[in-house]
Image (cartoon, rainbow, N blue to C red; front, side, top):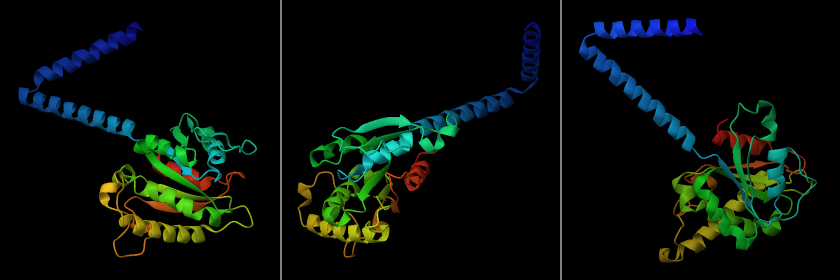
Length: 256
């Protein structure tokens, strides 16, 4: 320990002698450079720490959001689940990344119940979302298509989603079932339904709409590429653990 103290004192003495030998102007420049460097590092640190790490799982009841939540966190479907009336809300390292725990950034995942009267809960989490996963039941798609499109439309026209360009992944779940529809079919049908909604909503006075942003390009049929935020479509099956598309989406928008 004494040796380290002597070494530190020697370095301090050398630094003091060097400073005394320099012209005042050069010292001022050096101090200014150090100060600017510190400010830049502090600003970068603040920006990094303030970047959102919340992923919101949304969609209709029965689409498989809760099973997806458990697969991401535990690597298990917990033998299926029942419809939840409260959000599943947890911060964790993705199960697929457990071997790198301590080296990757945990993710805050919120599974918002899809019941119609609980949709306002979505507004609590969207302002701090790094991304939204909209889960669609690919097996029972046709019977729920209109309701799913309405829910998706509400998300895509939220001012906070548009202004912050929050990316949205449409996850076609249950594609392990023989009767499931393909992601291409689901994408095309959702675009058609959203286009119908856009036309009917545009007929309403803007005074009656408080938190909606106009969707798409006027005079053109709607498609997801017209959205100001990035909208992608993927498929998988939460029950069998085929959720790699969701994991990839999460890591694309919540850096490890």
